[in-house]
Length: 479
Image 1 (tube, rainbow, N blue to C red):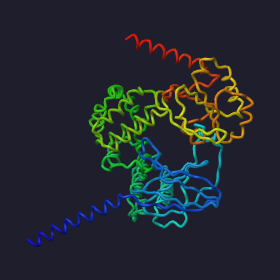
Image 2 (image 1 turned 180 degrees about the vertical axis):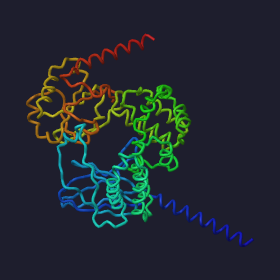
Image 3 (image 1 turned 60 degrees about the vertical axis):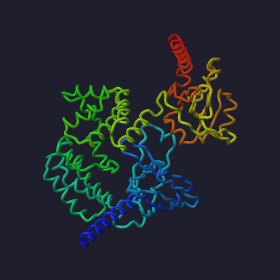
Image 4 (image 1 turned 135 degrees about the horizontal axis):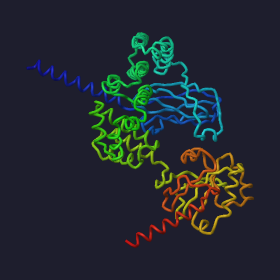
């Protein structure tokens, strides 16, 4: 009897210790980031991670403030290994951070570009890994870089056999060679990265159009889409999947399910026709809503109703959070949504929030007074009629490099008030070209997003808006 009690106590102690270790592993731990970057003196660089890989909502991990001597020291709190990135100048620099570790960063060579170039919708940042000083042999960043070099070497060696001859034996050899070289790692994150990265050689044989391939990588193994190699393979397989499935020979049935926002029907379709498990079906649905929203094949209203249905369903909370973030992203700056508030600073240095302007329509005019085209649009505002002048408050927003243009602005006597904004405010309104405008109603909602520029018929469209609002009021009174 005593022996039984001792065994029971030992077993209970084992579970308590195991649970304690799990709690400790999941608790946030400090990450220290240090280094020197003399070329980046006085820079302030935000390091982000993704909340999820589908909505790609950014979450701030740490701010790296580089002092006047070029030194920096910052900390972050992380509970799991995390892919992080920072956008600065021409770069998107990334790093894998592990809880409880210290990193001495080496910045890439300074490569400054004009802010206007970064706002260009066709701009693509140069992706690069942060180099590390004095990193150990088992550092995750070093392991991944060494693996990528080895993978490219093996892929080059077997390129013709894999991509031209479709040789499975060549794929097996590539995977076996890499497995031998990198079999000693006890880093779970690295092993998952390797597992999904080597899958690309197998993917080349049949473009992923194999039930066994999908089963092996996304059903038998639960995918972590925040691992870049896993997310990249997922995107290769399921990119624009609603469109893909609707365009099949018997795709009309599926297209109807999406048009009706029939969430249960879509899940049942994937379960019965594809033999997918619940987790994969839900991930593909979320990614497909994201992909389809701007494609035009499906009604945006139907796709938003799908997200609302997910929110009211019994889906897991993590998937519901993705759906919520996705809806926020898809409807961001849409007509009818709340106008994001930004800080506006006048020439005296006094700042206020955009949200403090209430009671009138606001014409938010992002402009550049040194630009001849922008000046022509500003001149057109001088010709505005009485209705526009009485009901619309014009806020002309310029970037810091034009703060010295106060005298020119006063001489021209352009309508409205002028304020200086920072690059972050311009990014908040996704300003890609100048001039660019938005119209905000008295309640703070976007009613023209974006709005026409002055020479492109803004005044006429505004008068039409007032007319339509008046007609709607009369209809309501007549009911």
